[in-house]
Image (cartoon, rainbow, N blue to C red; front, top):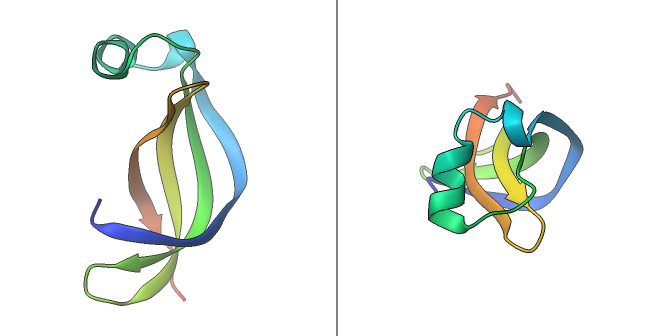
Amino acid sequence: MDFEIIGDIHNIAPIAITRGIRDLSRLQKCYGKGNWRKLKGFATVRLMNGTIHTAEIHWYEAHGIGKKEMKIKFPLLD
């Protein structure tokens, strides 16, 4: 990751669940079979240059496997 999450992720909402995920077969090959969901939420992040922003975060998650492939989708202006 090119950022660090500071604090908690809030306002978590699902984007896609199992069959609605385009990368489902890749996720299952890389991390194993599970009830995969693509989620989004908001968090305070520290970027590589040291600046701190509130940003929209997207990631994949499955029960027993955890959060995978977190990325910033939309840094919000502070």
